[in-house]
Length: 434
Image (cartoon, rainbow, N blue to C red; front, side, top):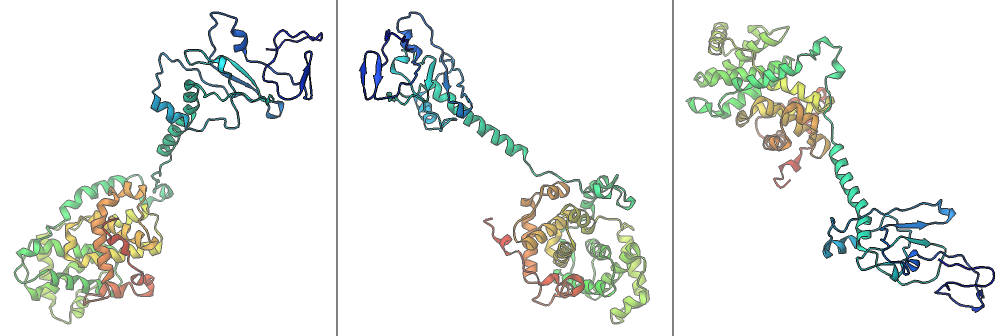
């Protein structure tokens, strides 16, 4: 601190004067500026003074007297290695617009500086002294805190699982109060409706190719009669469950398919096709007695159990979770009907088939992988669990228009299905490196 009086009595001459000359205690050639010297100069004459480890900057009024306070540090409890100090020294300080000015005499042997008053209007040059290590660490603390806050924000900002049933709360047909229990029951019972993917091994006169021809033909018959989607899936389920328990000769295989569709119509449809219509579409290959006899045989083999969860019941739920529109729904059913024809798809449970069809349809429709948290929650399948089945569906989509079994492709090329079969397959799903 500089103490002067009007009688030119200078008790402690200021140092670091630039330019001009002095006459007495007056300085000419440069405007006299009031300066505040560091307290460490006065402290030199004092003994036993403990340093106060903080820095207080006095700013001009234009900066609204903002103060950057430095946190206290205890060297006894916060050891700092040289490597850590060097890393922290490279960090950007929280107040980059400030210029810290220190006096070499203001630091003592323990490395901690005294309380320093810095006048930013004082432009006199001073020696550049490195900032004490404890101050550098205190400056880096806010950046570390920001990183922790960013990690916490990433954890908090997560895709929510939507309540897909809230919109149907007042719809009694949606049975919102029981829908979760119903699908939990379907998932529990679907294992009883599944058949062995190798059941054709016990058949001596028919094979996988014949099964595919039969189902491809039944899909066309189903479309010609304008039956509901539930009927088609139940028809295929009845055929597979019966063939897994009963050997059938080749000439009776078409009869099994027709009777299975008749039973599914009786279970699902309001208006059921008559037996004469089924005989007519088979080119009168069978009689009415043969149809009724096969109907009795199938029902007894299945023990009259027609209430099994097919892929259709899961499709309805999963499409709702995906917030699908009409185009996505048609594309999903196109892919899963292609899968009904293929014997190798019997190794997948109905719920997985439905989830993979919705996932593949989303990827085909949007052009990139799409599987939300809501879909994963309601299907109970992750994206990785669906990839194997989904890639097979993409392969079926690629060759749907080729070969002899093109019934599904022709069906979905019609305008009433939005010409869904003409869309480009999701080729990128076949890349195993993704």
